[in-house]
Length: 210
Picture 1 (tube, rainbow, N blue to C red):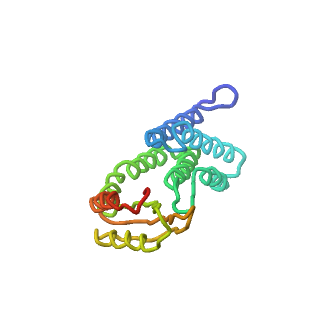
Picture 2: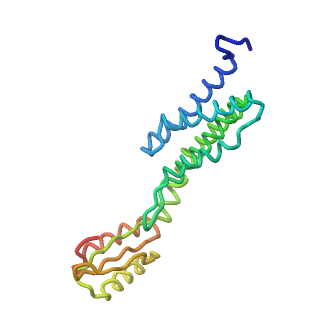
């Protein structure tokens, strides 16, 4: 490859272009699903790891493995945890993969970078339909219940109704506030049965809200 001005070669420009392409393809999928790390973020991660790898190679240090540690801080920033659930793990994984693709591209492995990009898309898009089917037959729902009194038997009554609908339950939180019993119950089972459970809960007079 012939060198251009300022010590930039055509190979460098190809690496930058491939990084932007791979990052944009994955970023579009994340942006479409309204994730925290979207279109521009994934592009910049892929491009940044490419540039760092190029600089490391020119300095005679080979591929900079420390990039993995640095990207970990970004990934941790998109993971949100509350008292009951964790969100953002898939987006964090995409960030990690984007950095790996950028490193592959920066080291000159264009085909590996492009193939890895489309394999990642297969996992994110095609496998999403498989996840949808699994969610249908094994759906999860967190019920937040507020009763009109602090009678613990009301909670037991709700658990019995859950079991009658052939669902599994796990009480995650129970407390008392202003004379009202509050509970959080994690329910799993077929999506159709959970919908029927919602209808049954609407008929319970002791429930102020759920």
